[in-house]
Amino acid sequence: MRYVSSRGEAPVLGFADVLLAGLASDGGLYVPETWPQIAPETIASFAGRPYAEVALEVLKPFVGDEIAPDALERMVREAYATFRHPAVAPLVQIGDRHFVLELFHGPTLAFKDVAMQLLARLMDHVLAQRGQRATVVGATSGDTGGAAIAAFAASDRTDMFILFPKGRVSPVQQRQMTTAGSDIVHAVAIEGTFDDCQALVKAMFNDAAFRRESALSGVNSINWARIMAQIVYYFTAAASVGAPRKAVSFTVPTGNFGDIFAGFAAKRMGLPVERLIVATNENDILERCLRTGRYEMEGVHATMSPSMDIEISSNFERLLFEASGRDAGVIRRLMDQLKQSRAFTVPDDILSYIRAEFDAGRTGEGETAETIRDQLASTAYLLDPHTAVAVAVAEKRMGDVPMISLGTAHPAKFPASVKAACGTEPPLPPSHADLMTKGERFDVLPNDLDALQAYIRERSRAVRLGAAA
Ligand SMILES: Cc1ncc(COP(=O)(O)O)c(C=O)c1O
Ligand SMILES: N[C@@H](CCOP(=O)(O)O)C(=O)O
Image (tube, rainbow, N blue to C red; front, side, top):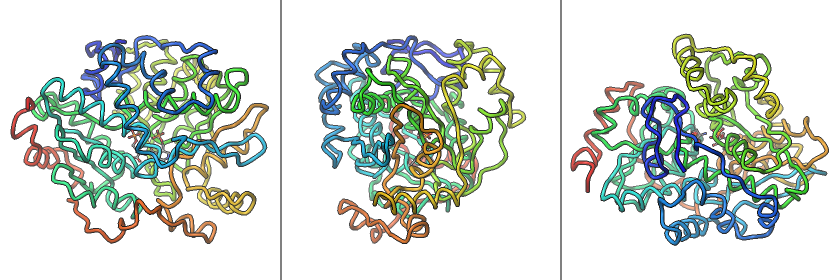
């Protein structure tokens, strides 16, 4: 499989290079040259099969022959053996035709573990094969950071720098990043928002000299391998409620658009998905864009679902690329406009394509809290605030087919908001027993590229020792 950039001016790469590249050198995002197809009988066979087996089947065409089949199989099995639930991503029925896909049974209690546990193994494998090391960077609104730190903890090929918005993540999320106690992991609180953190990461990738000097790699969903791993659970979930005989709809709590883009990819690969529904909190730029055709930044609000407090939704670029018939010129123009004027208008033909595939809804803070309260009262099921956003939006869009809302985090990551909503404080699982008492270590930096690059230069072994091991 070869991968092309959404901005059309970066080299076409194979899987291993895309994995290490993160962002394309033209600032675009890599997508597969073609969408592999999964036959209906294969989809039917996924029902009830072990998650790792299905993952192998779905991932193989994306990886191609760049990683030996036995090595890929070992990494996939190891990655999903870290999950506490034997099904890895179980479905729980919460209504007549409404299910929650629980994606939070991994080491850091959020859906990011599903992809990150595999990504870390794949990166280490490729770096070892090439005799290289890398400086791995990531921006987080709370969950990507903890998941990345847990997944890369044992890596001896990488140094990791995770940027989080100071004071805008939950205490559990922060401690998952700041208590790793590892010299190769650097948690950095940036004086700014998640969008500022993400902009810093992209600016480092767009600085060719720094990128080369530090052998930069990325763990955000700008990295194709993240999306690739997230495609798998759309297949397992749909197959367990009757696909491909029956179609299914998904509602996805959305911020950076990576998770829902993985659902779109599953559909392009042959999964019968009726609707993909974007659910946003008060940071509703995507809902407004689908309704009005205008992508317009207004400033980020802090909400009880902080991981979705995002305005620059990176993977929307991948969707625009697909919806434009892969017209990289259009994408370059729209992304330039966004940079210049913090807004762009989606051309009519692209908007029609998107509206044919996606719906969108938003929930305010009151409605999110009410959804947590009502769900607990009616079914004794406790939602985290992100999942509650999806459930609230989904409930208004139930059709004839099963609706699967993605459960992206464990409620115990947000105990204060959940308790305020319903009076019940969810306890952390035993794996996290000492999290709130461990010593924290992190640095605070201004929202400033030079300061950040100086910080990384000083601490990254890839810079100090050279990228080649
Ligand atoms: C708990 C949770 N839910 C939903 C989202 C939104 O997912 P995405 O950014 O892939 O749209 C995030 C962050 O990415 C998250 O951490
Ligand atoms: N919500 C995310 C933001 C980053 O998203 P990613 O999927 O692009 O890594 C987080 O929790 O960090």
